[in-house]
Length: 268
Image (cartoon, rainbow, N blue to C red; front, side, top):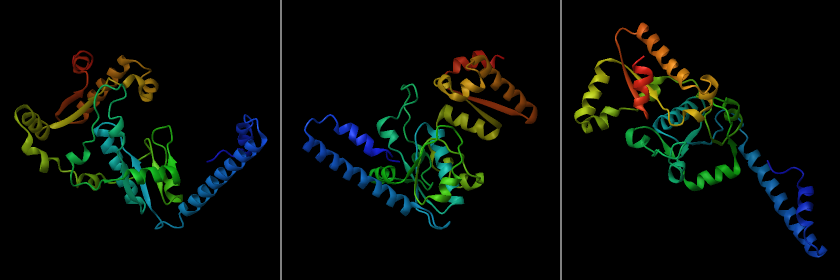
């Protein structure tokens, strides 16, 4: 939305020009520019209004972060395609200019298509990304899990940031195109092959413990009161719960600080 009281703002800007003729000329130029922008904004909004469920265009989803986040955004896109008649594309430019974790230490390359060549993952071009950000609704709610149904029901085209709630979708609709064995089993050697067979042949439970950026995550502050002891107890209680519910589980830990895991979780 453009600045509503733009006449007042323009008058404040041109006030610094001492000569009235030049001041008036600049004022008129700025009025023309802002009025044109308002017209463009109005036209783009009217063109972007959804008339019925089949009247859909493209949703571009910003994709960033590690592999889990990349999978998450892919699943979000699939859920949108299932419930609404949208073409879904992904903005992966974050991996061109940032591509690191929240501390700026570990690399976060884009790996999803490399791991899963069969998935439908359309990448938006730079021109499409620029055009959509400039002309259509850009949804960037600050909280995790916000509802996007209203946006999808009322807009032909959207650009989605952050982490909205994934719409209902059957897991099998996602996993049918994710066959890691097809492309990657032949590359496994020695310890990796042993680990693969252990994971495959046991009632395996994967536990991902990431300490590197946990202290800045809102859930760590709110749920665990910024306490690593509470954080460890959460995993211990979860492991005990699953041990009681599953017949013979084997737990596999994945962490950026395995020493902390050994001292605070496995020993307890």
